[in-house]
Image 1: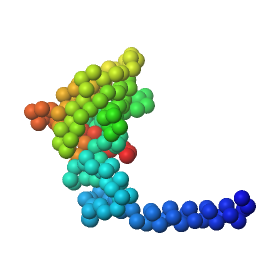
Image 2: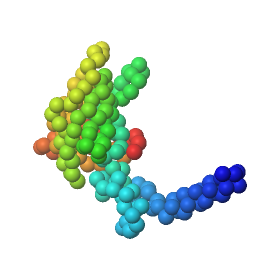
Image 3: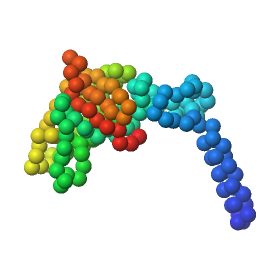
Image 4: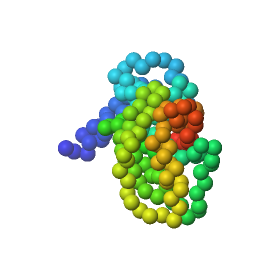
Amino acid sequence: MNKTTIFVCLGAAAGISLAVAGNLPERNRTAPSAPVTTSSEAVIEDVFAISDEKSNIPLIGTTWEILMIGDKKISLDQSDAKRPFLLLNKKESQASGFSGCNRFTGTYKSDATSLKFSSAMAMTRMACPEMGTETTFMDVLTRAKSWKIEGTTLHLYAADGKPLASFTALSQ
């Protein structure tokens, strides 16, 4: 294959990529304006299938960093490298994250309003000077029964509807 053929192939590939990208719907933080109609758009829409009506941020596939547990704002020392976070993966309904000292993984079940985590999460077993945040964080996951996303904030609620925790969206 000579250089001219390579450049022609690369140019064609770039043109196809731009054409496909031009046909994808733009996403913003408001509800989509038109229903999904093409197969490429259907795949993209599936990523947003479980999200609150007021937000296009999906519950699943977003990294959620802890903000508050109950009415207590979570603040960590400067020495802490990471804040506790939660990530729900659609494949195998896997929940994973960091609880303040240890990493965890387990399963979950969810629908449009309910969310339940497995009672037995696998965790690393590091000892840290301050284990209170981790203990409380894992208790929240055990007690969570429902969820709601407002803007970029995920709220978890107990079975009685009382707020358990709030998270902020970091990435998708």
